Image (cartoon, rainbow, N blue to C red; front, top):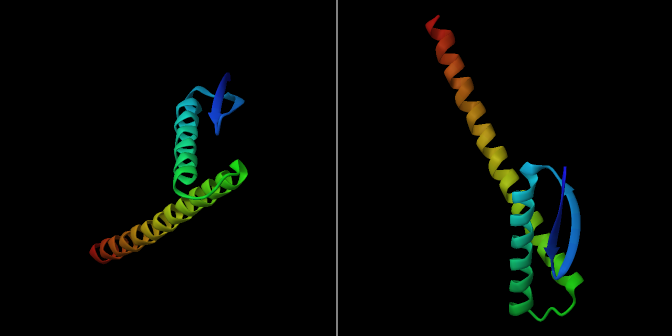
Length: 92
């Protein structure tokens, strides 16, 4: 484990992470900062907590959308695999 500092919304958060996590955490923190700036510049939001709540909502929405896409893809793959299995069963 290594110790790093991540800055989100002008606040520094010390974290202990594995080597593989550091790049993901840094890019995630950067994404959150960019989202915060977007909300601060484009909406009448003054309070950092409100900005962070909007960012959390946006990220949760994106996650749900990706989960739905992934689930639909998995169902389609399962359907195709069953069709292939049926065809193979007919051959043998």
